[in-house]
Amino acid sequence: MTHVKSAGPCYTRLHNQIFIAMILGAILGSQFGEDAAFWLGWLGTLFVRLLKMVIVPLILTSIVTGVASIGSGRDLGRLGLKTLTYYIATSMLAIFVGLALVNTIRPGVGADLANAARENVPDLQPPSSLGDIFIRMVPTNPIEALASADMLAIIFFAIVLGVGITRLPEAPRRTLSDFFNAGFELMMVVTGGVIRLAPLGVLGLITSAVAAAGLDTFKPLAWYAVTIVSGLAIHMFVTLPLLLMLIGGIKPLTHYRNMRDALVMAFSTSSSSATLPVTMQCLEERVGVSNRVTSFVIPMGATINMDGTALYECAGVIFISQVLGIGLDFTGQVTVAITALLASIGAAGIPSAGLVMIFIVTDAVNLKGPEVALIIGAMLAVDRPLDMLRTMVNIFSDSCGAAIIAKSEGETAVNA
Image (cartoon, rainbow, N blue to C red; front, side):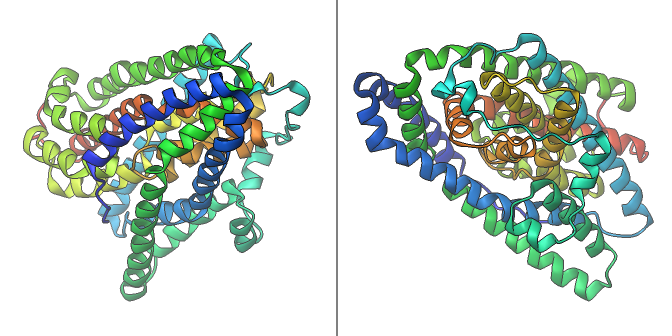
């Protein structure tokens, strides 16, 4: 499975550009109000449309490629089952942490982001039961699901396609795998190009948000950021180390030290794909994981194992519902959790991919409309540092999974 490497220095400059755009948008929105929003707001609208444009092809190619990379055969089947079980389990643990914190801290309660009034909030249409959640995942017409951007159905269909490819004879399997690999690489390039326009999008979105709600817009974002950072810290420094010790018999401090180069790369580039070669090198040369395990677990992890992204998407959507004054019930929050898990699987390993995927989760509970787009735009103002942190969590989780799975495969050379 191949990946397009992201240009780290370019994304580093993008970080500074987004920060400048945020400040400039806040100044223009507060000083010139609706006039500034009129002249610049279209930039934010265009950026959001570009983000939504790449969602369907990005999800389809990413998930099909990741699932198809499992391959066939008894050994690969066993390794694939262990890998998928680990990835799903750690992502769900991260989601539970995010849900617990966002419902405890409640950072969006009382906030007035995007000046969204209750009467302008769309009506929620949550599923009538937990069973209905799974029924909605199975499309009766996959083409219609793709055309209408029915995200749950698209994700399920992509998983089925990926599994089907692994069961084909070698020639058609290779042809289809190469096709979806090429499509995935193409969509990573396209999505990376869209993300490079983030400064202009931030300028338009923040100008509109501040013009509508004033500088008080940013006060609730502090609690939102605290919620996300706390969740990421708990997952990285409590949950994952416990898994290393209890399941793998590996000393967490030793593993942190062995993976420090990959963690620094993840933080500086916000790209799981760009960090991929460093992650594999650290695992093989310092941790002692065999190339057989590393070459299978890590490329798939860079595509489908996004613990930090899953936590962010889940907590972020609940934050949006709190800002809009909507209380999601148990079924609604389960919908958010399941969709966040599936959306994190489809998130590409490039900067701010989680920002693209959060629209999937909001759509799953019918949180739509310009108010939601403006709130997400305000969230983007603090997204870059959060993106850097959650990429570190994603990479560290991948490395923990590789080490634990290597131990379970009887590899005694793993540095514990």
